[in-house]
Length: 399
Image (cartoon, rainbow, N blue to C red; front, side, top):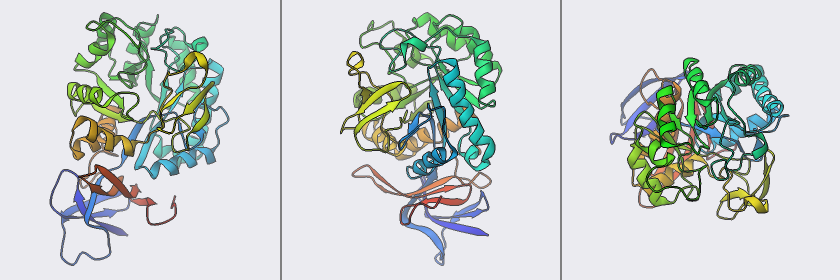
């Protein structure tokens, strides 16, 4: 049975009728005057659904909890769909091997037992434990578990994850890291630079070894550093590196977002939430792994302990707000901002058929929304996953 959506595809001006057949986009044609029984409308916009490559947790659920249940994961999936996110990478951060293996194993178990959940989770992102031990670059990751890179340890973690780790963030200056980067790339896994205090020369070596992305560039870094020769400039200048940005107004000031996005360009910029379990929750005190977090009324998330006061610890934003913010901060267009949250991460992760394109033959993973250009406000109406409406703003949660 087919279904139809009436609206305008982001980046185009013509009113179209989009027909879905099963899980696929069957056709995209000019709208007919007799377009009845179609959802959406003349004022609606249609775009690819979002893909968030770094989600530590959401709506009270922490992916760094070893005993994660399928109900908890489905709770996250459902709540993220309310923000237009159809795909995401659960992110597990620096901890002991035993703890990491347990968290990864819990995610793998749910994905094996529930293929519909696995469809929403195309990859696991391992952030650490092979990161800088220095204050600042280490961010909120626990010092006692930051360690040298070890390929054998990765293989054991990958076994626990059922082979689902497809992105690893590590600091290239850590002993053994460059070798691990080479091996990750050979295995088809995205090697990302992050939580690093590396010299510019080491950054260049990491790129030569095959590193492809900068994780939340500009964060997980020293509060002060040499003004010219530093790891942030070197990553911005590397044309072979994509970069993800947390555009919540706290991790990066608006002017910095504007400069960094212009430096990387629309094709190599990726929006991520880096959401923690407190995202989607009221301000207050929460737990992220082994660290206590305070979320301020402004939704700034930082470490709660005195020694780490002022150190950001993930974010409480969602990707929908990130799209709005990057338009306001960087002056990019709506199509560019949508691509940063959909097509760009999909290309990086090799998922371009599933997300990022609204064309016949591609998978029907879409959002339908209203756009107020003057206020820069995006009001989500529907999230469609594999041709099925999984969130409808006019109804109760549907999936």
